[in-house]
Image (cartoon, rainbow, N blue to C red; front, side, top):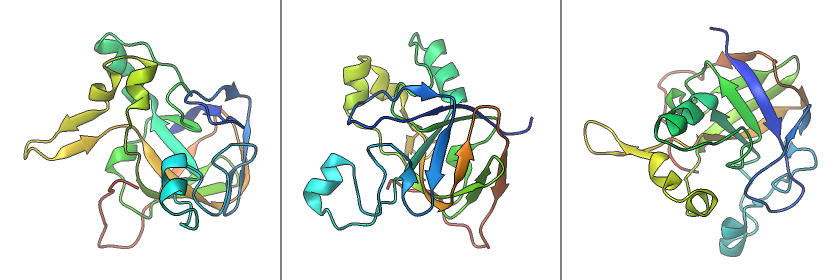
Length: 180
């Protein structure tokens, strides 16, 4: 299956859920045009409180729609954009990508994966018990974060549902994703 974008979302205000749109425009070095998290420095409130001068490594949040299938199997109903992502995908193992992977989204836009989204308690405020579904343990007992990946915009462009995703892996050795 060719990896695809299934939905795009943005919100100009600090809201947990981001409404779906027909398209989003990614701005080089900034993020999603018109999104509250757009900027060179951190925009997530908890990070701003710690140090507002930190670079924004969380400009674009991508999540795999296969996670929504897992949620449904566990009795939850979650649609694209409802847990705050900007780009919803299908057919790509986002969590298995190494740090520094470049994702070509549609014809022009390129984002570089910086790390895993660290799921927060707001997920349980959205639907009680959902936070637990975004976390797991591997066979060695290590915590697995399943709430998507964060990225920065290397090349801007318009991104739409139905656009293909092309994966460009970084040079070896690959560094596994960690929370960012």
